[in-house]
Amino acid sequence: MRPANSVVAVVDDEENIRETVGFALRREGYPVELYATGLEGWRAFQQKLPGLVILDITMPEMDGLELCRRIRAVSESTPIIFLTSRDEELDRVLGLEIGADDYLCKPFSMRELLARVKVLFRRAAIDHGATRPAADAPVRLGELELDLQRYAVRWRGTPISLTVTEFMMLHALVRYPGHVKTRKQLHQDGYPHDAYVSDRTIDSHIKRLRRKFEEADETFDRVETVYGLGYRWRDE
Image 1 (cartoon, helix red, strand yellow):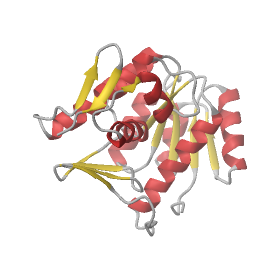
Image 2: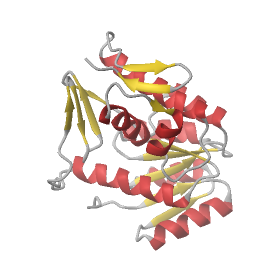
Image 3: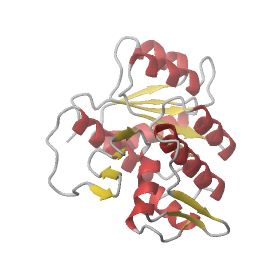
Image 4: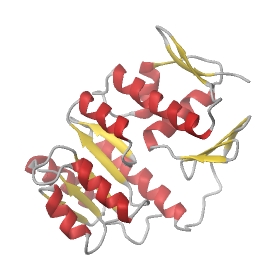
């Protein structure tokens, strides 16, 4: 179920990307707004925020990082997906933690982008009171709980705010506790339709995932690095 506001705003100074993404979204039934600069988008958002924002980082007049900050200053709940040009740029976004919900690197799979839009709208619909489906019961593993419908996580009762990608990677780890998941496997779980993600990007997501748990619990040590192989969720 989609929330009442299902408008998707695409803010990107590359006309080809803007128009192509807009066309694909309209074909899926989403109302779409297109903006060529961050400033143009912000002026419109001051009147009314869209339901979801797809946001390029490098733009004239106002870059995507600043626009994200401004959106977050007035709304914590509006889903934001960043489009990034390079892994270095993605690392910068991950380090700043300015509030985006998800990230895709250019060039990206349109099917992957549409899948993430659908997931974020589904999560937003549930958070705004939509009826929760009966399937996909929460996963509980010791003091960890994963809500597969809300894409929500609790550790020792404390909510942990994860992006969709981080959630999918965490779910991949806890499905087989104690088993090593290679970076390639985590890539497939976190970016199932995207072939343009490097190992370093996977490492950045895991590093950020760990840090979020450590901020809630400084003794957290369940996500282990298995050098030369990948990562695993440590058994109790």
